[in-house]
Structure formats: C-alpha cells, structure tokens
Length: 129
Image 1 (spheres, rainbow, N blue to C red):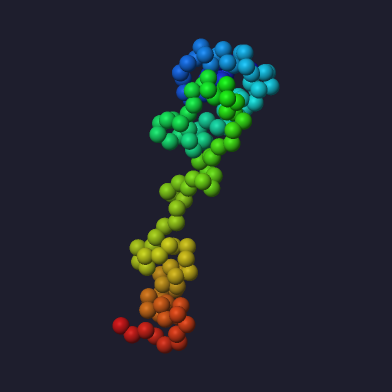
Image 2 (tube, helix red, strand yellow):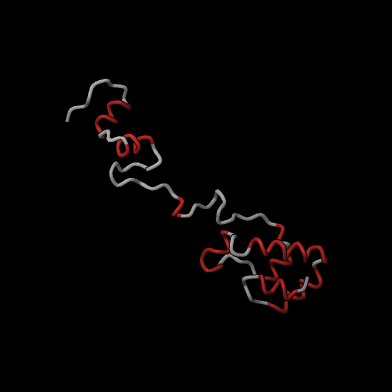
C-alpha cells in the first residue's frame, strides 16, 4: 500500500507532507492495509464526515497518528440517522401516521372519526355531533 492510495481516498487534502511522514514512520504494512480498507468503506458513508461539508473530518496526520481507522462510526443507514424520506408520513385526511391502525380504519375502510373514537373508548353506541 502506498501513501498515494491513502491520499487519493482521504477526503481532506491538507498537510500532505506531515501525513506522508506519519504514514511511513508510524504505520506498519498491516496498519497501512487496514487503514486503506477502512477508508474505502468509511468515505461517503460516515455520518460525521458528510455533515457541514466535511467539517468533522480530522486532519490526515491526526487520523493517522491517532489510529482513527480503528474507530467505530455511525453510517448514513445506521439507527442513529434516519433520512427524511424514511420518516413516517402523515395522512392529510385523518392527520395520523399512515402506518397506524387509526389511519387504516378511517381512510381505508371509511369509518369516520366519531365511529373510531367511540369504538376505541369501548362504547357500543355511535357518538353524536
């Protein structure tokens, strides 16, 4: 593994000379392989590295000196992060989440709100306006 492979993969391009020195002096061949493998997975999928135009990406020298390729991180698809498109949607008709029984009863089967309300409270009679 060469430093140029690391530099090509690493998203923050500052301090190249210092990073190259750390790469050559502080990392064994196996650590270099692990680092490259880690970066191939992490770049573009790390939640912290994608927000605010990469504001939280460490300097390359810091990443190498502190062994940050061994850190765990939250990915864009992890439980810690839900995209807005994955969020539950609210029905404009009944104003409840589309995945709920209430939405199904009111909008799908045609029961109106008052039927739903009295049935959910355990009453047998129909509510009157």
